[in-house]
Length: 190
Image (cartoon, rainbow, N blue to C red; front, side, top):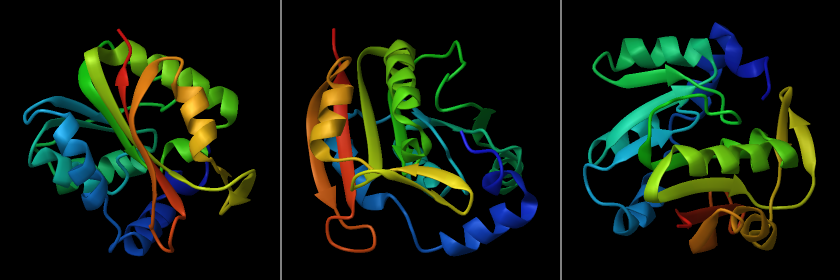
């Protein structure tokens, strides 16, 4: 995972300002038919907490982030919330969940790190557990503001997730422009 950008107070404050009008509300609506109310959800890369607050209206959510600055912000903003320090690759927790959710987080992982994360997500999910993740659509990778960004296609995501998950839904959507993103919802294989 990238070290710099999300790990300083100034960059976290900048990101919160830049992401002020961005939320995963539409993604969460797509998740709802696949996941019962009050299910336990682990959010990877909670960041400023926008999606955490939306998820928390329906589910029992544990937020996570590798950035201590984001965790400090979250704990101050939502003192009753449950937030843990967690790397999206190793997902080093003994807890089990009904779902794992992330919104534009796993694109920071290199291909081999994504495979590690997928395997670990399967391990922390209860039987029949659901994953819901969004990615930037495209090919190749780049460094943006010091952060690694890996682009994905629907077929590449299907290939890499199919080893551990049955794909329930995979579709393009618009974050900023038509078809710039991909939503993936899948169920843990028995």
